[in-house]
Image (tube, rainbow, N blue to C red; front, side, top):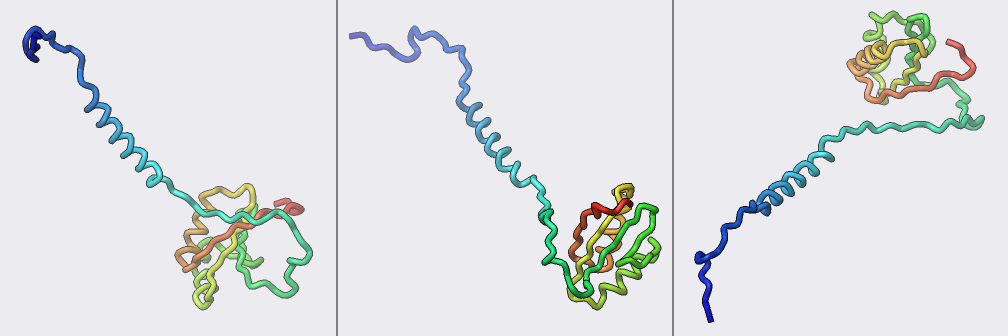
Length: 142
């Protein structure tokens, strides 16, 4: 019975050992898979149903504040015209003594996105905590 020694007559192995490389790749894969959920940014949006019911119409005056960006470039708060430069003072006058700081924004289709964002920034600076958007009226042609 012949005993083979490990170094005697054995051919050298020229194949690379890929096991450590696979281990490293699996660790990197796990790290990148954990980073994807952390990098997602979400915005909670509540879309109201598109059903208009006669029972939901309020009978008295509403205490909601609506900022309307008209098609002709003017601004209105609950139907009263307001200059853009005076929006901050108007918002402070309205919201400083209100416990619920909610504003609804209605914009005409031809207004620029930046104009809406500027008005919302002014409202946020005045203490408005919740900004909601109202859909355009279907029968109105602004």
